Length: 252
Image (cartoon, rainbow, N blue to C red):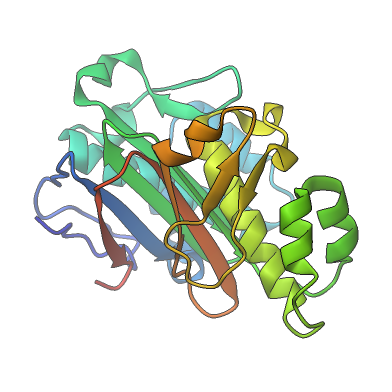
């Protein structure tokens, strides 16, 4: 069943509960700029600690986008769980990966969120770990120096094949794929970025090429590029194979 929600409006609501099969992964794509002016409504969904964090943002645009992304996460989770979004509680792993609290353990609902610029991606699955990352493609820094510090040898070799006009996009394609993988595993920065290889090929549906020290780990994950809109690159990583991706934008 497709989600029924107008998330371009600050007066958001669910027309029906949301359903997600064990064989599905749901990816929601949101234009945060389009919903940021609904901040007063979004704030009503947040917990006290989330509102405190929101108040710490120096720039109103950053605060509005954080509030909208967090409120949308709660609202969509509430739809899947048939629960009041305001009452949802979370716990965090040692590496700060958020999950639902033990109250909802029987639901086995996994999620991950990323936002950059005006784009937010929210991924959901049942019984499968997921990680998602989106980045706005920027041209204002030395990608080769950063790649030399964080990328694997194979990734640096791939990057060197791109022209100066292509290299920034290739860099962010690599970066989003690496971030999506470490977010899915929950390892955070404790997993060295040079310890695994991803493909830099555009549109790749099997982008995790190798993992070290366990070479079999790569086969346990699905890593692919997903659409995020002009000027952005994004990747989704999911545990296991044979799942189906269902995608919605904020205007569906």
